Length: 274
Ligand SMILES: [Zn+2]
Image (cartoon, rainbow, N blue to C red; front, side, top):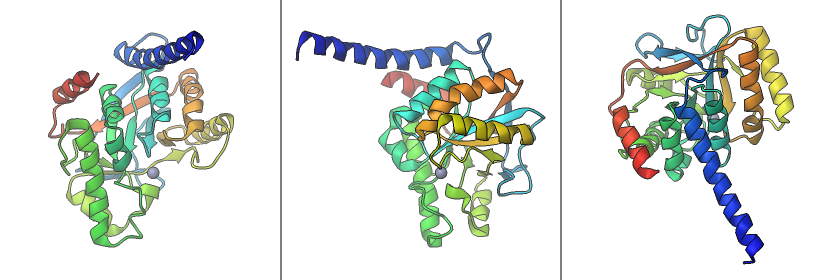
């Protein structure tokens, strides 16, 4: 390796470390003047609101005009999830991530980072198979293996009792039986009120226009994005600025009652890994 190559290498590793430090520092430094900020915390209880989201259900969360809940599905996914986290941290807003179990088991450090930066971690199955099209015994396995993988990454315990009892069906594909199963276990099913169609290829500019046009009509709601999508990670800073400039308020959803793993334990495990 030449001297110049070594310098480039060392600059690159410094830069990566600086980016990670900067997002964590930003998150620690909130609330901060001039940022969008999280406006309030909404506790969601499966006993009173077992299913929310107008795409699939007649009811949604009790949000006021210009209030939005930000949700990100299908992660964790390096390198895009850290870009999403950095954008959220720089505007001091908290979101909810519905994780797929297999990538969570492969990137536990990133799962712990999501939680340590104050975001809510919900569940999105083990492999993202359609839970409408597989046999019922495999449905339970898909749900439980996903929850256990997320919990293992978060707290080192492969429990099927989720710390945060929030679940979103892959592709919103649910049946009366799977809905009953989750309700019987006190797990809130999250749909969505609006979405960016970010599963389709488009430029960040096109995605920004699509979601802001929809938000102008809906004026509030649970918004669905996908953090593994590079176009979403690229678009997010501009979308958060749009929310700030147009007087939208971000609501952070959390479970009504604390789960079996305490937040202290989580912080301890995050700090010891970093
Ligand atoms: Zn999904």
